[in-house]
Length: 502
Image (tube, rainbow, N blue to C red; front, side, top):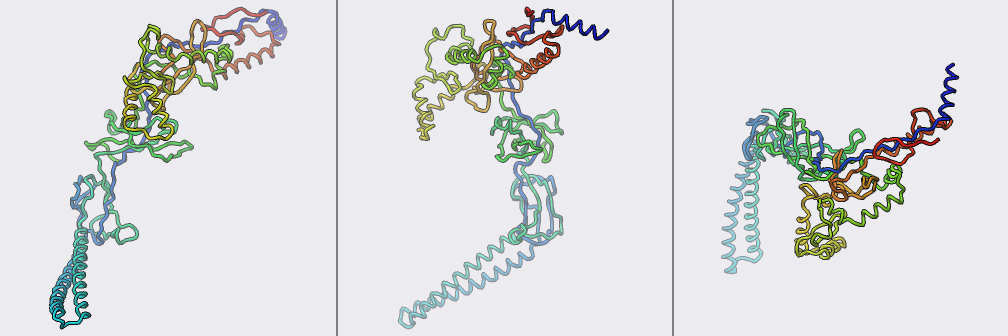
């Protein structure tokens, strides 16, 4: 009975009219103004900004230690005393040698004086006179050498008092009283590390940022740091530098980024775990479109096929959009009057197709001549540099928001293609984007308020649906089953059904 029922259903399905295929469902999203905030988050560890290893130039036994870990020490303060007996004996011996050298110098000076008198009266030979001069010079050299020995001995004696090289905090103590230490100036092993000091008024966080985000990070970006000890108190810092050497962890390439933080209150301690948020950029009340609506040259043809547009038609639409960038710029600004009715302005087209308003007295020929000079390796003059500075200052502030325009920062945005709903049908158009987050991208040029961009299903989804339909048609002999629909139909903005084929 079941076999007969199935056969009857298949026969009825083969003779019945096949339902019309459903239209391609897409979503038309209006272009609106919104705030776009982009930041990079990473974890790291609090580290001192400056760390110094304290060693003693003198060798011997430690007699006294005046500091402990955590002690705040000023530069030049006494911290450790080393046994001074050897240095004191060396000092006494050097002073005695100096006294002997001075006595010999006095004797040599007297002999030189007598030799001068005898040589003047022809009672002394020239050889004996020259010898007296040489003895006097040697005596003077011996005094200088003895004075140097005394000074070196005095330095060695002073080195038995280990004083602070910086103003900071003792963060580590490696020795105790009674321990015998070695000098780094005499020991090939580098000497004994007595203490470690750090200036904790400035600390830094060393964090790892993924290589996909490192292009957005640059020195000076504002950062917010939070630690578990003070979860409700964020600390403000700035990016100190991006290390040039990458670090690979679990097959992920990352770059170390150092964030410097002021720590005047001493709340941040070395070794604390920290969460870092680097504020990459912010645009307030700018035109924005969903990232899913953006298409590149590689996938624009597949998207056009989903919409039922031919590649030639898409190329023609893009050519028309590219031929009128000034009209698009006027639309972006919400200017109701045509561009021809506006007074002529001193403008030029930027590298991303944007219109740049030049300052008064500056012409496009001047600016392009300076650009050509720089590109050819020539050195621009101070006047030309000042002119460029005026042009760049005039470019401040992107469309509809504060900050720099997207065209002046190569870290963000680029050129894309979107399909816009105009006149009841999809139209391909070029746009330039600026700052972008995970969901939306700033529109720098190409769209205006009131436009609606189309978010399409992926080409792979359409292909899988097509393959599924063909497979079901083969199973049913091409007649189709009740409730099954085909996707081969011209697009529409709503999933309404049309007529079918017999």
